[in-house]
Image (tube, rainbow over the protein chains, first blue to last red):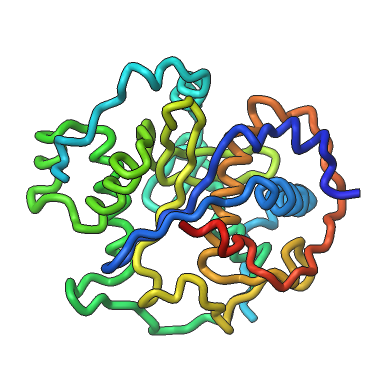
Length: 63
Length: 235
């Protein structure tokens, strides 16, 4: 089962807010990154990165 | 809004438990330009390069550079200028800012600060906040960290003028790796920014409370084709 609610609670991501603020010539757009997205996507990506050896991080792959 | 009209750190921010944590977080990682090093020695990959190399596939578009018509500044230069000005705006008073930027703040800088401070009432407390995680061995800078009136910390990823406004448009030359955890998700600049700030926030949170967490070796699939940030979250 994913995400594990215990892990999400431990990270306390619901206690912080993250925004993307995009400035253009004509307007400013502010979008909040949803907490569940931070939990699901953030932890999935994080655990994916943890499976990679640190010295492999700088490998370049161009397709 | 003039540079000196932005309020300095107000007393109320210090009542937030987060203030001490954020201001007291110091990493031995040094950020020099786009490079991160462990106290000037060993190089540490930045989050952007980790995302590019581990999570995304990208067809390089050689020679493609966005030059803004009105100012003649390249898109990347404009982004760097705005980031630098916002950092100086937060760190220095009006005179200090003017000494560093005699031509005054760029219109984008003013617009971004106005949105954060006046419109939303956030108090910026740190900019270009370097965070690092030794387990994953990567570092990044969070563009702006603010506190809301209720003490909630707000982490902001700042983007400027993305290719003529195509912030939500899918770039056909970029996508998430099929073998990665974001396979199937849309990969617009907005989505990339969301992942970027999310990982930065997790790096801030991890040292405090999540060291004991054991992570699964394999990741779940996110098969959805929808964007990572629902449009309903837009202002």
